[in-house]
Amino acid sequence: MGNPAAVFGRVKAAKNDDAIIDVGYWDAHVVAPWSKDLDFDVKVQSFREIYDRQPTDSIRKLALREWNHLVWKSLRRFLRKTYSPDWPAQRLEEQSPKLERTLMAARDCLRCCEYSDWWEWMVGSRLLFWSWPLESQKWARDGLPIYLLGQPTDYRKPQPRERDPAVAMVVRTKFDKFRSKGYVAKGRVEGLTSFITAPKGDGDIRLVFDGTKSGLISTIWAPSFTLPLVNSLLTALEPGTWMADINIAEQFYNFLLDPAVRPFCGVDLSPYYPGTTSWERWER
Image (cartoon, rainbow, N blue to C red; front, side, top):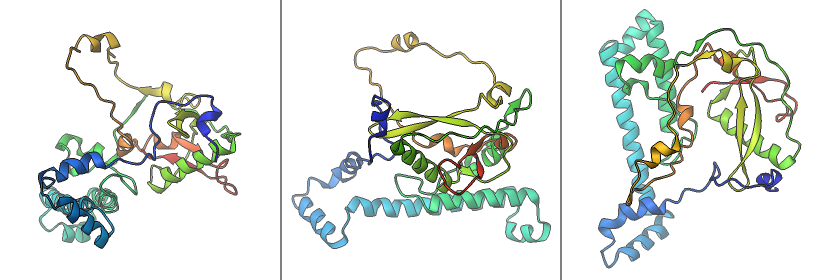
């Protein structure tokens, strides 16, 4: 495959979405207390030969299992406190809609946790809403309400396909990932959001979605806020100050979209999935 970034004539100074994680930085800190052992290297090599993995991989696997157990325990405490100590029986007897919504959301949270590895949410992620403050638990579970000043239009112009086959292939890969993790899913669609591609890293692209043509952006109400200029930041710097560039990856996909807005966040997938004319929509 060609270099999609080269198609745009430049390469962005950013890492690819699927860049390999250099776990050595973390491993060095984990093994530091034992590294003074004269036989340390021999023991590590022996472990790798027997189990075909690093000792730290086993440590992470055990820690992840324990974390999943703690997540389930925290959910169980929440259900007992919020509904009833015997909440399974309450569910069967009363069929409480509120309890059903909570259980459906909790089941999805547990699924995301169970199938994750130490470094990545393999099947997507969402907020563990029961760990949030009481006043935020509902929107953390269902999505933060978005206030509209009007009604977006039913924008339905077909999405053009990327002309360069290399770029088109990367776009398809992006959507495969979005769909497999539930970020883009089937649902009622009343308006589309078009998108363009921009270069990212070495051979990767960024998908930029546009909600202006459908009128979605212009109808969303948001409180005004002050954005500091770079000069404000520079006044806080002095010799010895350190700054960092942090990749938050899929952080924003943790947050569910307001159900009332999702129908206007449709995506035309037909150019990248031959034989289908289906529209899907953003859920996050």
